Length: 317
Image (cartoon, rainbow, N blue to C red):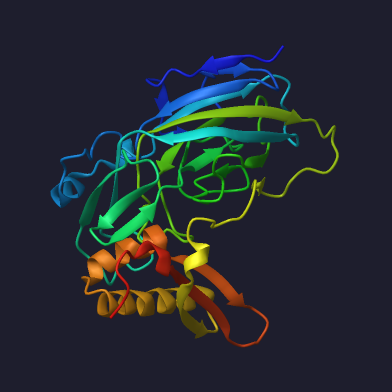
């Protein structure tokens, strides 16, 4: 019979290692309830300002709840994680941090915003800009195989720091098991994020979640080359109806095209909405979606940045 487990919120780890002892062992079909910390592990709080980023201890970043061992899971199997419920817990923050993000050369100084998430449906970036709250976990994964501890960033075939905002309530994440027991962990929760997370943060926040785990035995057959997921409905139902403004980056290098596209969007937001470039950069990370528009017209590829009009409470002009 399937059981519901409550994971101890004081049990966290900060790196991946198959040598960590499981904090909890479950069976296929069981549900686990998590309460996760925000990604800085308390270094930033509701009353913080940008000076908190100057003393950042990077060894305390990414407190993950886990490892959760799944009985009978073996390398090559597939662990399905169903997001039954995901809820924010009161507040969150977004920042550009020196030396990180898509455009560190453009934004060398720390910049921080704190958000009130108690409304549940949206939070205000500015009095006239409302960001829909669509919570998800930035980091969900099984443990990678390897003898040494590894950092939570970057992601890999095992999952990890995926920062994929559509893996929200109702979605099912499918992870290729790498080590016996799977050793699942989660954390780095976001209340909102655009596709790309360009300044390196979404709205980072503490989170409550319930996840159901289902083990798919492959018996040595085909597994997954990397994580896959299913969503329960439209990808952007809260913003689609209002239309979009898009800027393009065009060139032979996708990363450079991405930077060009985002820089153009920052300029557009700054001019059209009377916003500082620093705030515009943060807004891009929370609300702008990056899309590869074309990869077949050699030698130039196109990356587009999409800004939803619906977040603005006051029209332009």
